[in-house]
Length: 193
Image (cartoon, rainbow, N blue to C red):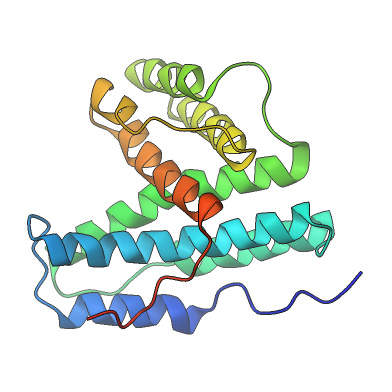
């Protein structure tokens, strides 16, 4: 077993993104602001994709891979201190979107891809569960959809428009980042001004 080539994600990396958001005027309607938030989200999803790929290629043992995912999750989901309520809400949205990315990666590493349904069927089941206020089941279904995306299946992002806005649409947004990360795990440059 060879040593993994690099640290997958760091607190410094997350904090650099958060500091950029803190320092910049953020308007979610503005394309540059939206891109900055998406880059923050994609960057974390890429780190997760790299861990899953390293595990898949035999560079990490199952337990090591799960620990790496847990480390990234702890960094990304830690509480962020912001004076600006709106920015805090935007960061919270990114964190919410990424929750299912972590669950999907853990589930994939622990059990492989889900095999009971398609990505679309899992997302629809999640929306139904959310409508019935069963958030845990909804997250479980979205995570299962995520395992299939990790396994190479496609997520049609227009699905998010078909379900009522809520946690499931946030999570599907996260899965979209995961899908991009799995197909092109190139690091998002922090300074692409």
